[in-house]
Image 1: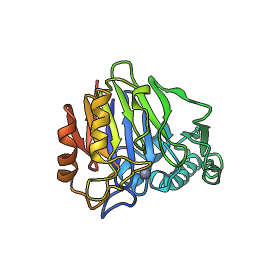
Image 2: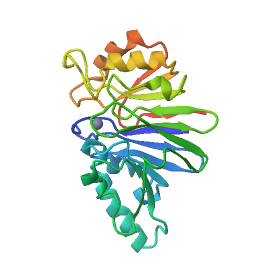
Image 3: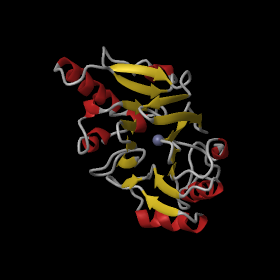
Length: 246
Ligand SMILES: [Zn+2]
């Protein structure tokens, strides 16, 4: 399996950047996890957007779905031009309904509500979806290929129960929305870099990738706040960062 960062910033992309989106590749499948603003132009470095096998949208906030609506055009046109025969399968929540209604588009998309599909196989990859602490329905994604496990934490506040999802994942991709200098006194719906590191240590993650970063942060300051709390291998997200697992 290979996990590649296509976008990692929030709530907006910095210059040349992108909000969250990740390419998950196995021997036989390509899955796009979240599709934020700027993600499609990064994806095109690895494959054509219409060559994806599936998309997972963790939740329907715009920083995670903005480019999905452009991806719909890419898939529809590919079908008209004969580059693709099947609709693109998309796993995404059914709420808020106002946005869920827009997930299907002509014959381009086969939408499967996560509420009804809490686990699935995409090729040989087993995916399961686990609710996080966020103001709207939001799901962490656990991927297992039989040899390695990746937990993508999506957007998640401090009340998220990581230990119910997994123990000792090979990679934990966790949001680090806040640093000490700008964390609210009672953060809800998001974590700080320190809280992400503590959570990763609690579940025994072997590797931690910190993401969902404010565009003005430097990776050095994110690493500085997380490092003392996590004993495994620590990465700070950047576009094109790729982590290969067995
Ligand atoms: Zn977000």
